[in-house]
Amino acid sequence: MSFGGYWVVYDSTPVSEVKEFLNVNDFDVTCFKEYLSNKFNRHLRMQLTSFSDFDSVSVHLVILGFKNTNLNPNTLKNIIHFLIYHHYMVLYHKISSDHEIDQMRQKIAGQVGVDLKTYLENSS
Image (cartoon, rainbow, N blue to C red; front, side, top):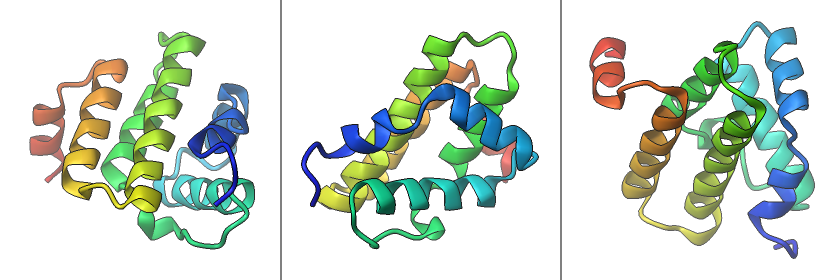
């Protein structure tokens, strides 16, 4: 594994780049999951991830955050951090994925200003 862990991926994923990517790709969940997979593979110098490794709920919550023009760049940076960190833990440290994904969703929803329970009820 590349030295630096998830920081290598996080540092190479600035808010401005994510914002531009999402705008160009019409805020598409699958496209963003592919973007994340490419980031992980390129910056960790491993071809271990695919778009299906990324949690769709968390990715959609991130997209909601980027659609919200009231969120400041620091909040968006936190959202990206949670998304990358928790996926890294699941993918490379084989942490209990249910617990880790639940934590990630909670943190991202909190930053976005969405009640996760209500969001999950309305999306099913």
